[in-house]
Image 1: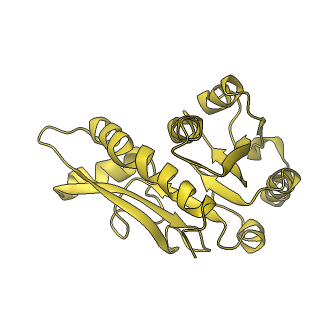
Image 2 (image 1 turned 90 degrees about the vertical axis):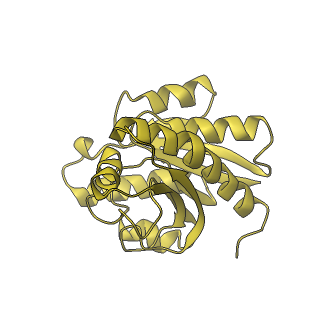
Length: 198
């Protein structure tokens, strides 16, 4: 059984997709061991509570410096003996110590077709604003392994989503979540849990 830590920062819609896909057995051989948020009082923590999952907040605001926060985050993850870390809208740069400890065992969902609209500064609505500004006709989402660069790790899955006339960043974000993110993130977890990824 693959033990997963899901790291979140806000609403937790990707977390909910994982919870739902484990419940309906779309994801097999995996369980959420812990949900960790870097922000207090977010909807993602409520979702974890409703699903009866262990959840906690490790916030940089609660520590004197970044090094102390990084240590606390690593210790919290280690305490749950996880096999895979899933970044599901986690808006914190992952410390190198965690990347070293969990090499090739951290995946991230990014709301574009990498290498487009990725890297430093591209997160959340900013990605969709950039896609609309550039005038692309197709966008999508990418699940990739996390390395020490920003959105530079090996790509696991991608799914394309059309950009429609009259799209706003918000409408495009919603479509990318519904048609891509909520599908390929659970799919990637299931692939890893069942030994279909090397």
